[in-house]
Structure formats: C-alpha cells, structure tokens
Image (cartoon, rainbow, N blue to C red; front, top):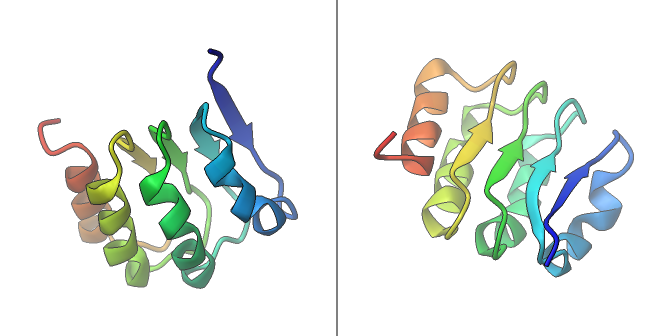
Length: 108
C-alpha cells in the first residue's frame, strides 16, 4: 500500500477535519501557517491521537499557546505512531515545546 502526505492551505483544514480519520495511509500532516488556534487543535485531537499511521505533524507558524500543551501531550501519548511534532514559531513556550517533544519521543 502507498503512504500519503497531506499539506493544507489556510482554508483547507476545517472542512476536511472529519475526513482525516479515513485517510488511513496518511503518515504526515502539514498544518503549518494556517492560523490554527488552540480551539481548533482541540477539535482535531480525537482524530490525531487515534490515527493508525500518522507519524509527523507540522503545526509550525500557528498561534498555538501553552494552552495546547496538554492536548498535544495527550495526542502523542495515545497515538501509536506520532513521534514528531513541529512546533517551531508557535506561541508555545520553550518548556511546553520540550514537554511535547519528550512525550512524542521519550528515548530521543
């Protein structure tokens, strides 16, 4: 089976949010620079943490704050494959980013 990567523009995320769970070969999701908020990330979380193959999530250049730390940690803890989350140029503090990265890859 082929694997898939998905990159979205600033209008594309919300309409396909419910479809991501059916994209079973999706391994990477680029949701960078979409104006993604803590609230929308919380809506995405149930899909992300139970996705069967998603291993890379790019959330860079979004105005996510430390309020998303718990949501992100929960996602990576419950996901079988999500081991890399790009949080560069978000509003998450260095401590929150480090906590998420440790949860995603505790041995790395």
